[in-house]
Length: 405
Image 1 (tube, rainbow, N blue to C red):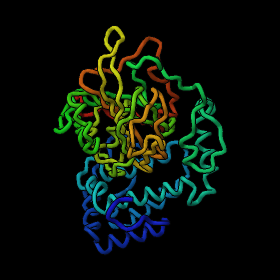
Image 2: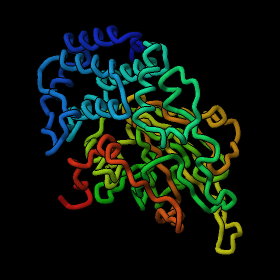
Image 3: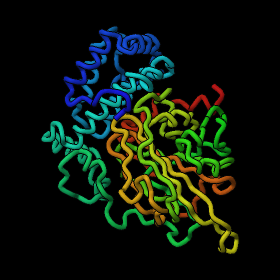
Image 4: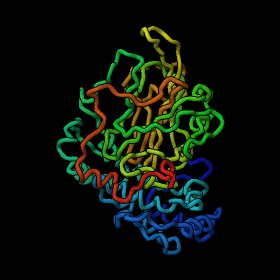
């Protein structure tokens, strides 16, 4: 729950009555903020599909209420939920008043309240009977080839299905006995973010900015990543949604619930970026989102394979849009009473429905690039239907942050 506000709504009608009341009374300048957000909405990028557009320009609170009612009633396939996230993102798209509205004040509490309703809904606490049909639609759209990777269980709620478990042996951990090898924490799209981090002072690399101190919520371990590297690992909505330890060692600090915003991308199309998800994006957005973090203490090796000292790797699971959940297994939840031993590839936690990514942090000169050996997987030759639904490259253009537009 967002601190300092009344309890979350117990039904959609209660939620809609609440935001109508805020608007009519302009409580804490809710009306002023929403009207400014709508006034500042920018035109869609050229080629934006009709299915992700929404007419936000109609004045008044009923447009917002109508949208939330439609969203709450979604009859989802794999991509339908992402459509609604994108429709909502036009409020903050290159629109500073719109972004301010959804990341602060009652606007932020509104998104938290609605997110909580969706979470209860998908956990089966509301409208529980509807999910068998929805799960069936997801399974049909994923298809037998992708579903063959997962254990088939009697999923009773949508979120049980969403965090479905992979079959044994389908994700073997590479070089498990070589402590110098870093592995992907999740099924994800990987991009280097920043290669010269500073702990306290925001830096700007081609306008890709990141403050490790803020990202780690003021942790004393932030200083270890001064001059280091950050890597983003973005999960797709239809992927396996557990995340795992990228290295072996000990978890020396954790926090599974750093309070933050639920929505507020400056440029959602830029994040997707023609399928190269996250490339060139300004990751400072994510310092404001709800997130967690772990600090892993690990060993380094020298050229002979012997010890080269100890150091740290940071792991920051970020909940983006919709349920925005960051769930650690009990052994990794804060406060830790003592360091917790962890194996490379061991499960750390999961994300329930919504957008999500992990940001990995490395110390200076320890992770200069993403490096692969011959024969290892670098990607998938996608079905065109999946590309169209999840990446929609037809109207994504190369990030202006990297091509000088």
